[in-house]
Length: 198
Image (cartoon, rainbow, N blue to C red; front, side, top):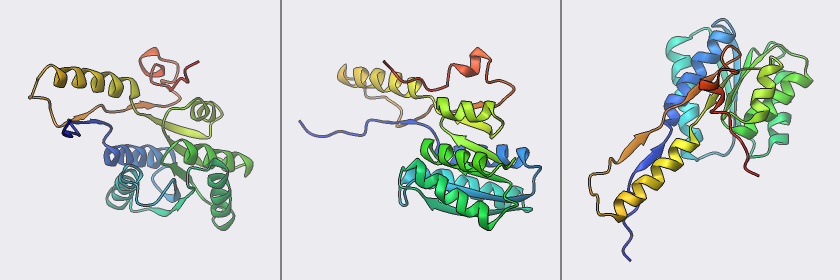
């Protein structure tokens, strides 16, 4: 039949996620120093939004923080680790890293650990590895999207559309859960840690 998609956007506000990440990293490093963005692919709207939100907040709210990057790892965690290690070698005083997705944060975190630095990493996406790095003191904040909410609402909207409902909102933002060392064991937050199905 005729294409009517998309019915609605259901998901995270990536720019806002970048803003939250910037404020979390700035707090972790005391509002000054050099930070680095490791990202996935250029010209991808989701990570571009995260990068933009991060840069905007740093420029407007934290003038004593210098932002390097982004470098693009093409969804390769090993490449993210290599890129971050190279940045650390050139900037031994690097204070923190923003990883714009699972691969970026995991690779950057491994590079920080391998360098023996106390620099902080903000991880976008609440994977088990990101939580493990938080427990080791490498990651200071994990920004969890809410995939269950996204999927649940998508199914509800599809059923409503099939039933003839025409008043569906065009945009639904599902928000984030901000996980840190103080709340990681709280069930109200830990329920947002991503789990892989069996």
